[in-house]
Length: 308
Image (tube, rainbow, N blue to C red):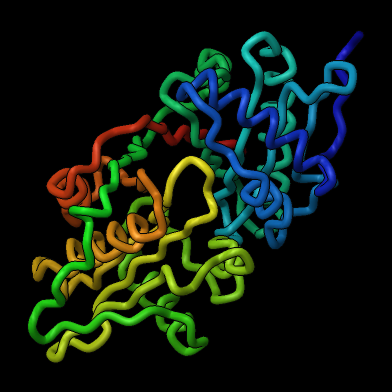
């Protein structure tokens, strides 16, 4: 039976989740994609599923899936693409369609070209020769790190003198975390400024337990950093973001927040915690995580092409 292709719909989320978990099993050895994550992606603000999503079926079975979104409102456009290894022809056709849509989207934003990014496992199910043949190249590498947890040793750390930590169950503190995120990540590779409402979607705030989001402050500097964690992944507890303002770095605040999160997850019965980090991060984050016992789970490359 020949392939069929159509836009994805929110009702496809369970089938897409199953497809992505089959890809996970091939790439990292076990399924780690949750339904709520796929649903949040399909509801991304500004994404028109009719034009910005692709679902390829072999009969009634999804074998490839793609999604495009635009956070820059300029030339930068992001895509995700997943395919089972034996269906590279479908992936090639989808890739061509996604590039064309990315250029259309960039031109709608007033840009003359599209700079397109795609994140892939370093040993992906997608044949990377398809990318190289279309002038894609790797521009960055990220590591997904993980660490075992032990409630006997991962206890709540002592708060240093002159330091305070609070959770973010109050709306004012959520707004403050957004401000700290924007300020602490502004110099990072591929950072895109986000309005508060957009950021809330990006972190799937509807499903977030805000008691796992903390702000750290000092007597001298006031609010100086934050950590945003979530406990709705089946595979492990997850630290989505950890940021410290540039003027507050080197004081141990990041490490304190990290240990605080370890203790919270251990107290909840989690046996593993994970996070992602840019391997070329210049703030010292990779060394911080290494010192705190986090090791590489798998690696992800950012691929880029320019379409004009």
